[in-house]
Image 1 (cartoon, rainbow, N blue to C red):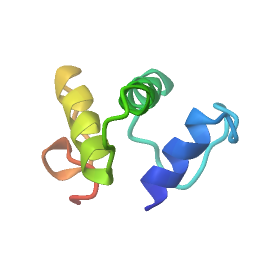
Image 2 (image 1 turned 180 degrees about the vertical axis):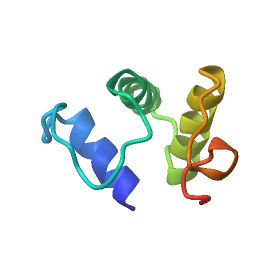
Image 3 (image 1 turned 135 degrees about the vertical axis):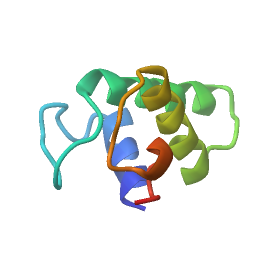
Image 4 (image 1 turned 60 degrees about the vertical axis):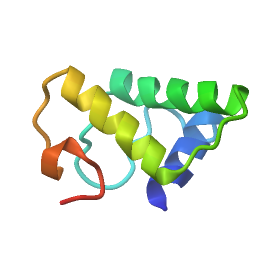
Length: 79
């Protein structure tokens, strides 16, 4: 739920990009912007968008950067 709220805030520029929310961040500003762009594209195309879609996109981004995170298999929500 927090992920969807945060993405909503980022898309609508409610939370400044520089704002640090919560604990240690796993995504860089650049990676977060890729997730926001993905969400905006899906919304513009009127395609359904769920937490699962967002998590899969985060995993795809992390895997493409070959980045190790605390997430099991780089999948957010699976600690």
